[in-house]
Length: 160
Ligand code: 4NP
Image 1 (cartoon, rainbow, N blue to C red):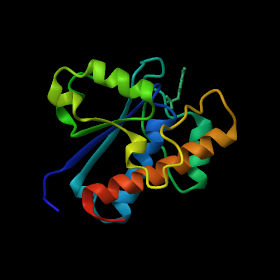
Image 2: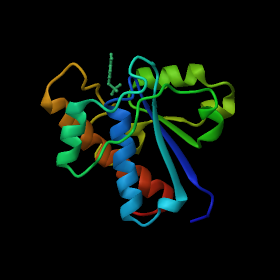
Image 3: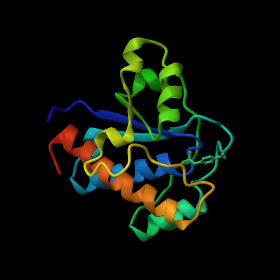
Image 4: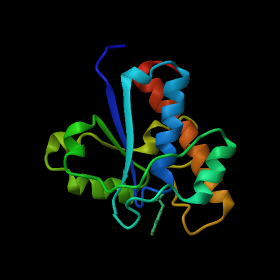
C-alpha cells in the first residue's frame, strides 16, 4: 500500500444520520486494521440546516450499541472539498446527482461515488434516509454501511 493518505468524504443530506455513521464505521475499520495514519475520513451534508449539531440522538444510540461513537459535528459541503478529497461518497441517488452538479470540474466529478457501489451483499442500491422513520431504519443504515465500508476498505487496502 502506498504512503499517500486516502482522503474520503462521506456525504448525505443533513450530515446528522447516514454520513456521520459512515464516517464512524470507516474510521473503526481503519483503526482496527492499524491504518489510522494512512487515512483521512470526514463527512458533510448537502444542506446546512443542522450545521453545528451533533449527530441525531437516535442514530447515535443505535450506533453506540454496535460499538461506534458518533462524534462529528454537522457541516455543509464546501467547494474546496472537491479538491481536497480523493473520494466523495453519497448515500443515495439524490445525493450523488447533487454532488455531481456541484463538482467544479470533470476531475472533481469523477471523485463522486455512491456508497452501495462498494457493497458486498448488494441488498440495497442506496442507503435509505432514516430521519422520518423508526428504529428499523437506523439499524438498516448501520447494516448497509458496515457492508459497504468493508467493501471500500477491501478495494482500497486489500484488507477484508
Ligand atoms: P441524513 O438524514 O441525510 O442521513 O443526515 C437527514 C437528516 C435531516 C433531514 C433529512 C435527512 N432534514 O430534513 O432535516
